[in-house]
Amino acid sequence: GLQENHEAKVVFLNEIVKPGTINNTISLKIFDEYGNVLTDYYDVIYEYGILEILPIVLQIETESDKKEYDGTPLTNSNYVIEGTPLSNHFVIVNVFGSQTEIGSSNNDFSYQILDENGVDVSYGYDVTTKPGILQVHKIKVYIITSSAQKIYDGEPLTCHEYTVENLPEQYKEDVDVIGTITDVGFVYNDAILNGIIDINTNQYVDELPYHEIVLEFGSLQVIESFDSAGGGDGSIDGPGFNEGEGVVTVLEVLAYVTSTVYLRERSFGDYTL
Image 1: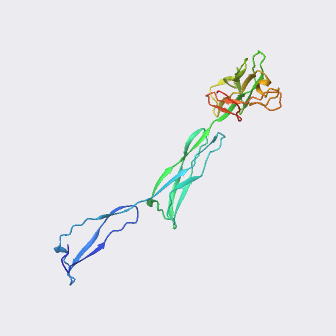
Image 2: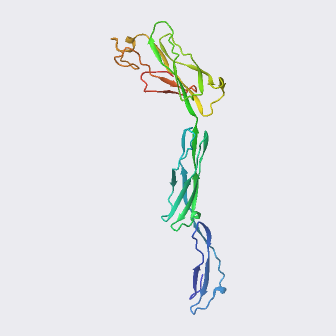
Image 3: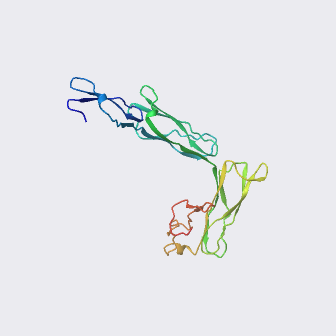
């Protein structure tokens, strides 16, 4: 310690403004009561503290987006910034991601952080960038088999009708609808897609460049009688029927050939898929 009537004067030498760390160094002099410097008569051991400034943490994330192919670029300029810059600092984001062809890519962007004078102050921030994904999908071509229903008569119920949506005019489909049911019950009106034919060459094509085929199956249903479906008086008011009509309304159960099953409209009654 200091001897009586001796005084130490300390001057702090370092300061820090930008993120980082430095030693908190000092200059020290020891005086007696007459102002004489006596520092050299002391064995001074210095232990410096650490001055540290942490950067402000920000995350910049652009939105993801998707659409079916239409030959035009898919873009999305929306973004979200997590974290809060200083009140006189401004984050400027330029989103330039774009996807035109079928496939996906990052919704890329660049950024600057400027102060009110337009000076780059990005050094004060720890920024994580998270680009979204832009996806362009093939156009779905739907081949949808029709539905049919009847009262049991011992004969097979079939319906070979189907509709096609979104198939380009230069192509035609080769489809066999094979669904059939004879006994009381319910089945999908299954179909087999033999292929897609190019009308210009009359040849099957291996793949459509901008389209994908989706098979959706209607339903075939045979019931015992209207009475069995209704309230016993011949009316049709049970689940799956239109009240007061003399026909059975079968809810269209649709299924992708990948076995993903969903309902086109609200389902009534119990069905096993």
